[in-house]
Image 1 (cartoon, rainbow, N blue to C red):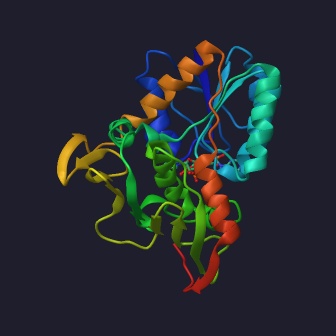
Image 2 (image 1 turned 45 degrees about the vertical axis):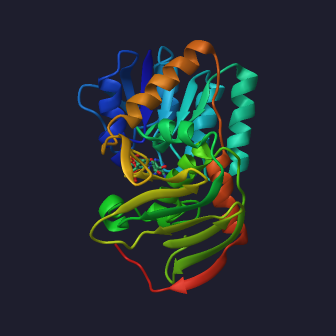
Image 3 (image 1 turned 60 degrees about the vertical axis):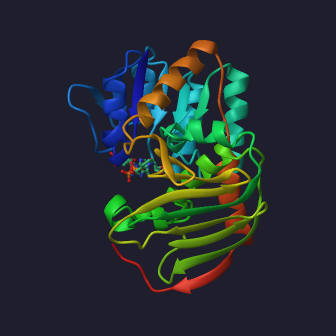
Length: 303
Ligand code: NAP
């Protein structure tokens, strides 16, 4: 199937382009980006021009930041294209509901991807937890924004989500692996004095679940989810790629290179089945944290 990539920036180049190139299902037929392009692939800098010039490209994968994404997704669906959305799937929950309704009305596939759910140890962790009683869980997601998002000011603008941009990856895993849903009960959010979105967040959920997200961690980076159960502890480390049960390695591998190939394989399957996959559970927690969170002002942040 032919796919167009829209928003040729960091994640498109790092993950989408190689995942498509190595997939038996997909051909990268076009790109749409104001500045970016991919060598050897027809490049457009205007989405409407792409839609009218390339009716043969039936699938559009949107790698833009969340705020500009809705207009592109809506235009793609109105033009009869299946749509794959980077995470988080939108700037607001309501706009994703609107896309879901539009895709259903047009009989098109809409896929809200969550790449961290494709991490190697997530499915085995979910299977192991399925018949356990969860006593406690804690997420530690601490990374260096300067290393992973150099100069990306949009993350600190309204709708950019701040530290929830990586934190929502942890929440996408949590909402996948827990045998029963939890809901947010309290949050404290640290906003740099010169920015619109938080750089640190501490979250409390029902069911004795807590989370610590921080974007100021230099040195070793931490992407851990630790769960205590009635059958002992389980931990997911390295962003869901490595599993430990009772303190011992129990599966996975320290690589994220399988996540995007798995997303594109899922998209191929959804299009073939004429189905959509829209799950907003991780984003509901972020919206609730921004609704309920106590604001703490912290020192100004500049890249
Ligand atoms: P990015 O490099 O800052 O942006 C991607 C591209 O989108 C830009 O190069 C730009 O291309 C286009 N764009 C930016 N703002 C736009 C606007 N207002 N209107 C139209 N086009 C615009 O961002 P990214 O890091 O790739 O992240 C994109 C999405 O992927 C985010 O939702 C993020 O959460 C997700 N993601 C990122 C990572 C990561 O490691 N960075 C990992 C996983 C998922 P042109 O200037 O050429 O138009």
